[in-house]
Length: 225
Image (cartoon, rainbow, N blue to C red; front, side, top):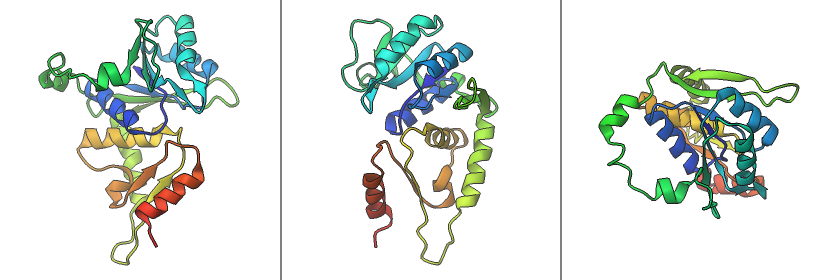
């Protein structure tokens, strides 16, 4: 089990796919959640790995993860994505320096990963509720159940063809990693487009909080007048 707390962006998709390739399940945690919720979820899943940003929207996730690691003994590794990653803690891994910037094919050949890769019926994600009115509750998804969700979404978003429509999805929820990560997993597991792409459309996901900037960009990029 790998706990991932990242805003939307390509590192999120890459890490989600890497976990599936290695046969690991993912526990997505919203970036808006803080120590109390994170500590509770890591205690439930006993995840040995946490992946999060060094900072996001002026909040220090690296410091929070260090505090949680001191309280949750099963958390042994912290992968940080961003700048100014601490170099004096052996439990901390710099995503860009230690993972993205290194060729690991000799250590993890394709044949080994083929054996480990998650199967359709394996657990893909453990998603938690927000815990607004009580303790967060975890729900288990397999790759198959994510596929069912994705197919239903594609059916709803199926654009009207032949009428000049250019339907698409603009998702301004920088911290909602569930949609993007689930689409990436479905695309990998079932070797087919996922989400809006499966409906012959396109999607834009935001990693920023400025809604006016995002929608202005999406309109120019996908729906020019």
